[in-house]
Amino acid sequence: MKKLILLLGVSLMLLTPVAAMAQLPSTASAAEMKKLDFLTGDWKGEGWIEMGPGGRSTFKQTEAVQSKLNGTVIIVEGLGTGKLASSGQEGVVHNALAVISYDSAARKYLFRAFRADGNYIDANVTPIEKGLIWSFRPPQQGGEIRYTIKLTDAGQWLEIGEFSMDGKQWRKFFEMTLQRVK
Image (cartoon, helix red, strand yellow):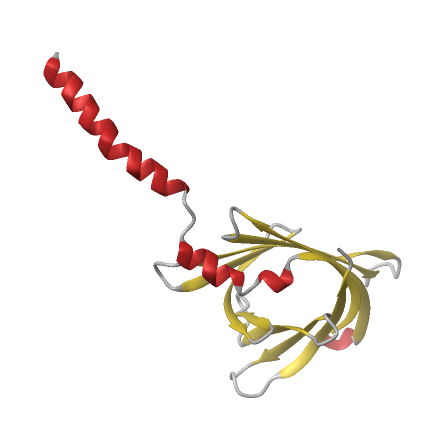
């Protein structure tokens, strides 16, 4: 019986620090995520997108960005409305949710964006001065898509989307300007 009690006591002593450590945010993760703090808040504005032969279409956009789990995760929820190509009526043209975190062991950001149709992409993230670049290779399509988000001197969120087949020549197909509303 004494051996069992001793074994339980040693087990609890060994497991308690591990359980406590599991709840502490990684200082490296929190520090890296701090570089993206400029995104947090509620944003509203408009933009345009040019996809295929349909020409350029405009949209109104909102982005709700929240920092979670002691600053180690950012949730971005975007909703865009504009004229629907199928009916010409006003409706939802973009609905997405992104989760951004930092993997301190791999020393890289993790960015997964989900669309309302159930599909998702995993993107690469690179912080830049007053902004970030997120990019990905579309599945079953050659080339690369990159979005550059910059915080302007006026405090606006300016985002530009570009496409490249070779990584050298880029064609702009998207631009959005948002103002912080909260």
